[in-house]
Image (cartoon, rainbow, N blue to C red; front, side, top):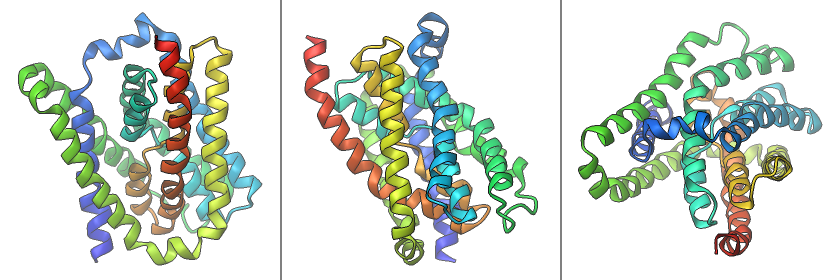
Length: 288
């Protein structure tokens, strides 16, 4: 009962709060970036929408994961970038505006991508315990409710009360992020025994997906002649997924689907943090 309260009620509410604060930092002009300066955004979104899920499929096959965990890993790979990616991009002296724009756009696209890849993964891996009508319309509505609606609310608050947002945005983000971390920790703790039991089985796959996604997306960005600062933002967006969304969606289908996201979360902060530290000096030099 406590686990259901956390994953089905508190986690979506906390995720919604985070998305509202993300909306505080976005305007319609940020979304026009796709038309005005599309290269970085389009490459980043292509990596998020195509590369990350494809890598999740490949890694699940490589490690021969159980079908339910393979589906959970794809669900994680199909999830949008997380707000922590914005913070790490800022600390790494990457292009923070690009990072925020990618997070916002990928969160909107998640209404389509998450249900589509979830369905494909269930079919591909033959997860027979999951294929009896996973209620995709319900999942679409759930993703929409915890991403697009609160994001739009945050943007509308900024439009109507820019002075209030300017005065309170930083503190609002700090409070929302702290609450969010507490609820995510509670969600992971609620499945702690299952997470620990399958840690050895999933750790290699989670780390491989994380490191490979960051390395390949960075390479793709640099190969497309984007600078290090833009490539840093794109790589961190691929490395720091919105695991809370994966947990929230997965728990509505089967709690075992949340385990790969929980394991991934245990490592992504370390690897992404190390990458941000590595790029900090390089990007600082490029900015001068």
